[in-house]
Image (cartoon, rainbow, N blue to C red; front, side, top):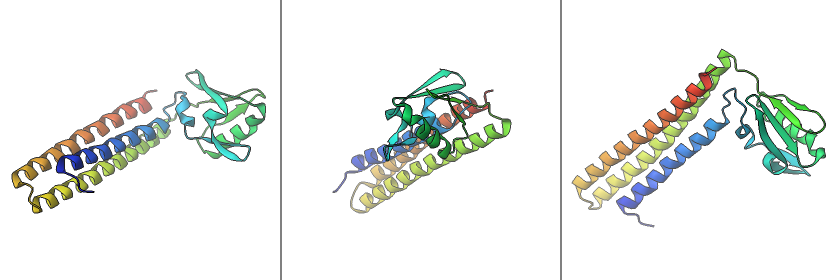
Length: 187
């Protein structure tokens, strides 16, 4: 399929948007010391031999700023839910009282906070790599089109547009990271 330069630019923007969306998804998983049900968004529980998302076998809610309550639809799911939380290696200890699973989010130590900030920055760097890859593809496409007869001055303008676009996405990534770092470091 042949693309015009404008269509390819839109395609590149979509890749950059996906990098930002992925970064948001990954940053949500990094816990900040406050209870959040998003910690369990990707958790799968064995339900009659099938890995099933936790949200489909139980009600997950926050009872206070440090406690998450998991109420399974069936009492027989208490042990598999506990097992899934342990094996997910989230650093959390579930407490089963025979009715619900209660998880207390421990306060973060200063070292753990720094570690989480490092993890967030790593995710930010991964997002920047995604943006850079899209940039390279876009620039290569523009250069090929110029060789095929696309006006050179328009090609230069598109290259400048691409660089400005990349800068704006880098700024978005930096803002997301700054907000997450502030959230993590707030005691």
